[in-house]
Length: 621
Image (tube, rainbow, N blue to C red; front, top):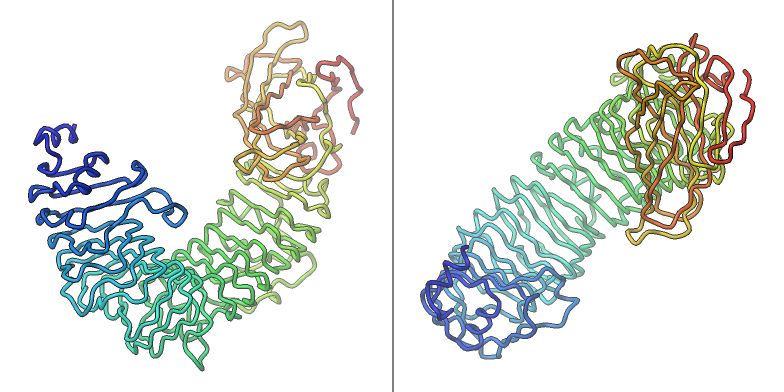
């Protein structure tokens, strides 16, 4: 509708207020037919083949407020589509938005007036510099020069007192004294990525309210006597010459900081204790810092919700810097044990420790970690055992930590098992953990879903088939529980990977309850379960089912027919499946988790092998 209204203003595109049609814009810029009526231009470069802009294309557009020439692709991966003559030297003076992806100019026009700019975006440009001298830039809020590899200096921004965001990165070679970044009370985001020769000797950089700073892989950065600073995703070999860089950094980081990313810092060996001052920090990511070995103990960052230490391959100790973490990522670290006191992470939802080659033992008190949803220990080949009550047997708990103030009074013996009415929502993954005792794991742990490596259904599942259904005899009694509960396991073999990089399977369980004569039956279906793995081969998917039974409790069922249906997004085959009933028929010793109990039913069971019609005797207790 808006485009049609603008089109009706004039048959001549240059006399309209706004241009968004790529063909019209190309005509105006090539033929130099723009006028003072034009207020805004928005050109999607992806819609054109080639554009040769006239040297005076913008001279008649003295009222132009918005100029956006953009692409949704990475400009450095594509051949330039826009071409400017060497004589091009003019941009309108009233621009509030100047967005020009892949701008071919090497410098801004000599008489360019940036005073009215609110947002300047020149990503992947050919610019070597912008403008000279100090300008009044009180309107400027955002500068984005990402990917401008030829940039050697940025202008003096000391008068851009309302600047909120500045992105200067990606393969930048910037050598400049003094620093263009001085005192910005409103600055919240700074980004500098792979700035190979970045160097500044400004002695006073005061950032009072930054929330994010991105300085990834920016080497040779020298900052002396910095008052306030904030860093995210950077690689620095020299921060303060002759000083412990991160110790100094920790004392100067602003207390308002909420997000801190550090990556690929080869000189980082430890995180300074002074990080405890960042009480508003919610997201801390220290990734691929291969020499990081220890974190401070005895501090509690109360606001911290997400901690990511992936790729810190020499980190040996489990982090204890906050008890309020909800997401904890420790992939490819040298941690050997998940300690018992992780139970104090009462808000923890996600614990991911894939490819931790030295991880040997895990303590997780599932009854206390009530918010836990995902636990992934896949590809931890040294993992041999786990304790799901949380405490190491026969050890003095207090001896494991000096942080006694944070510990609740501890019992003399291991905690009791999970409550009878406990329903786990945890998804576990132990892919390629071949030294872990699967039988013990299944007997001890409560979960919603579990993924392990395996090419056959374990004997733990007392009723098995290679077909599509199992017919199981039930007690000749009314159902007094709202659900029929059992644990199911199925082996799937993936011969190839999905084009999305992960193999996924949907499993649907359907039950038909009926009498021996086939009458008085009703159907009940369990919600679909989804499993995914990112490698080929055989995998065992296990999950607990709670099948709703007749709500009227007026059905006397003799038999249940359990059917498995599955669909997958990759080439796969179901090799076999089985179930283990967990209905409480008489006494607590019959419940799931008792290693002396096999089939959890109270009378003879006849197992029919799905489509094959073969019968086997029940397993006897």
